[in-house]
Length: 93
Length: 216
Image 1 (cartoon, rainbow over the protein chains, first blue to last red):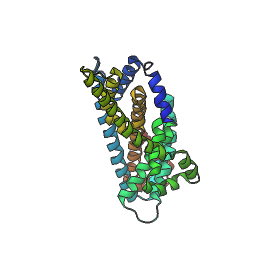
Image 2: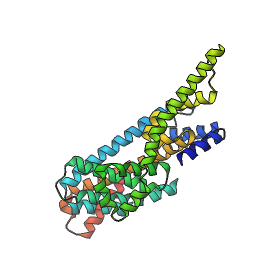
Image 3: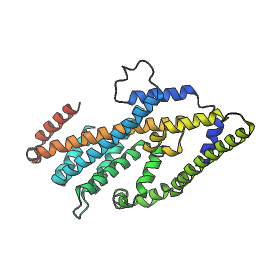
Image 4: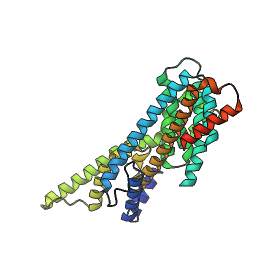
């Protein structure tokens, strides 16, 4: 399946336009935490790639920290109140 | 994209809560570290389930299922579905292929370039490598890190990699937000435990209202 994919990539490489890539890059740029309003001018794709990578890393780190916090919290409180809190937050979503 | 996000919240919560419950109810006293890993696993699994079927979710679930230390938690979360899901999401060959492919692509390109160099050296002209190869080399160098960060990214290129990365970032952000709000809710309840637990329904409502307000 992956070989087929690479095959089609070879043949359709010309079909993937600059426009598509630029659009994706600008979307990525908008997702990044730095104010996109500031960046009226186009930031280089390379910069966007770098910042995306560091953003993904920081998000991974946040998940890690939150998992640790939740782990400590669940260890200290008893199950019932924890699950009650969780249910409460469910109802509020 | 909004529809996807709405979908995501409920599915994520359901799945994550299940995972938390499993992580919490592991009977023998486990370390905080182990529970943390179990929670992280639950979160990632929930995120993948909430997003649906994309390249990166498939790769992520495959990766999670392959680790030996995850198996017991996964079995707890998935129950009867474990066997079925692991059959669907086990492509060890895929990743082996990637490893092999990586090596072979590199060596192929190297030998291709070397050949070109050799042949053009004989002709006495400068190196003539096709521009598409140059472009691809440059692109691969620039996206090397991104490929490693996005699950399943090693297999993608160009716009596919970028769109997967975009999707992945959006889902990650949503995952973090959900975990944060859950943590806050759990924190509030644990700190004001004494007042809330006796079931005066009015009190509970007030508490939930304030929490809702602070969330907004």
